[in-house]
Length: 468
Ligand SMILES: [Zn+2]
Image 1 (cartoon, rainbow, N blue to C red):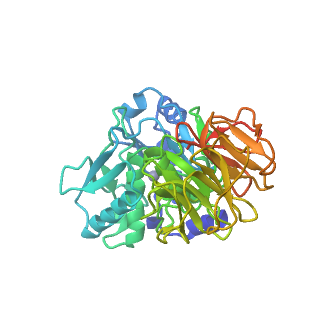
Image 2 (cartoon, helix red, strand yellow):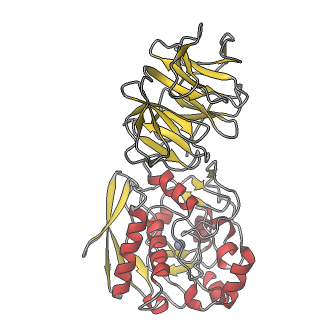
Image 3 (tube, helix red, strand yellow):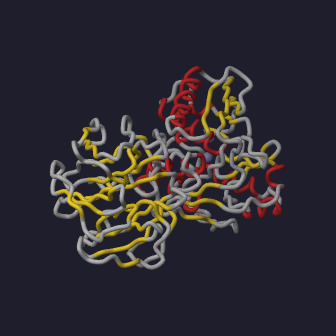
């Protein structure tokens, strides 16, 4: 991935770049004029000191990031967040006061820019973040304005959110370079990129700018003393096509999967952890299926993806997935219901009550926890329930890949029994959970008393909060 982009950059016209590699010599001269204390300050904040440009009231770094004199003089801004090995985002000085709508106005630019702004706003708003955007005719929280920024420079951010949690303004766009009727996807990406800075996002490839920009001096500034948090579940390699790559290759870059994770981490409804659920299971494709606090179903592709609402999926209190992929739910009436696929309607299973929890044994036998907290089995969906002697007292149940039955006791601790007729054995340090399932890789996934997701790699591993 690196070399084709690098090759492209050497051949590409000026107007394909956020900043131009052929300006390096001139910029190197300019840099002599930047005071050492300013260079050190920029470095200490974790930004590249390569091609720093002095502009009115501050400096531009990394091509399009405006750092005001005031911002540089504020106290150091601590940590950045890493998503993938090359992605990081400032976590301090984010937009606050969520949920919040930021308004944007645009002036002095061709009509195609307004259309691209609307498209960029739609990209953000489609994520249903707690931060959304709206275009207004004038006087927006963030003004987008024309400015001639020099050859090869497409745009300039207004900087980052201030310590009061408000966005900076304005965003400057250089229509001399971008053109009056450019590719709309590309222009949408440029605008979404500059908006990204105003809500606190850094360049994706900050640690390896040559990845998108095609030069490497210096390639990696280190973390600038500000620290970095890697988000588990995301790759550590370069992440192609992020909308926050430092340099544009002229292409459209809609949010990729990691971009979505980053935005959800910063501004999503799940930003304080794994989202609240009361039940959990795993679909045939490995995706996680949860029961929300509203008793509706939600899915997430991975442990670290955002939850997605499943329409018409309520109201259930328990859930499992049968070997053939059929989803088996317990309704608010404690009876069983099935749906063939996520989007199928629920179908009532006659004579199937009264249950608190349900799972399926490897041989297809349905195993339920009754209202008396004891276990019951039914060979098929239409068979009658059969009582399992000495099987109480449970709140929930699942089955490990080897057939071991894993139950949640009334004390919210985990218990195992090798077979249906074995005695229960306490799993040490396994509380406190209200629901449990097993992922396809054998990881045990539990819902804590706080309704958050927790994993333990093996029965005897400690619980780890799923947090991103
Ligand atoms: Zn940028």
